[in-house]
Image (cartoon, rainbow, N blue to C red; front, side, top):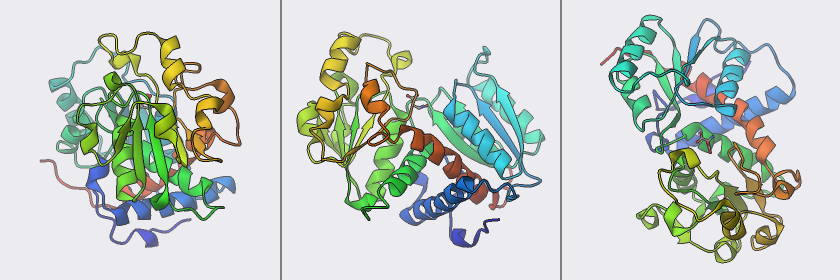
Length: 323
Ligand code: ASP
């Protein structure tokens, strides 16, 4: 069983935002994630780091990868896992979330994973419960565990070349405006010292993006030049009230990643996508399914290991009182 030796000095009590962590915290989590990745390859079933602990998954929005990987991560560490599938219900925000928090708190969980359509919902919940709260995506705000798993995946993918994330040029492309994945990844990559570029149409880039420590491009050819990594984002149509793009076909023509556009990046550049993918809209199947260049399935694999590391690290924190 992995011990917590490498976590001395890990500071966060909750995982709500990448901004709650310093570089050391992030590197400790990545090291532990790497160790869990090795263990999962060996199919070690003897890990009981979370034995006797209760993990509640509270998903107010739909999820495939994130919910299942938290469930698997909790079970692999021996926790009791409860999934509360409330995405389809008509619960309102605000009061209902607080009522839910009180109910859950009475069950004495140790770890609470929450996805919610409202930015800030996990932070609010963390003030009302006495266990560790993990943000599994809140509105357009953040998705910190996705950024951590992406970093773990990059570390592994570039291990052979010895290239460090700190020296990489990473392009994040597409619907930045509605993307919590982009917001968390930008912060994390900046903390680790990578050069970050955002590429997308002006309608899908926040007006203040140039103040996020990134370079902004509207043209794939210019933006992808010299990039080691191309991170594609889904067009988040469910968050678009109006017409942000003329048509999906036109969007693919200008911003969809195919082999022609990928050739603008550095030779050997690797491609990422957090999923779910819209094939033929932001990425061609040809690129997405090529294991030589696509890290997409590796991202899912890294997701379980990274979430094991996060659950393990936060489970070591003292439970606090409710505020
Ligand atoms: N799965 C990611 C999220 O929950 C990305 C996406 O939905 O496009 O934000």
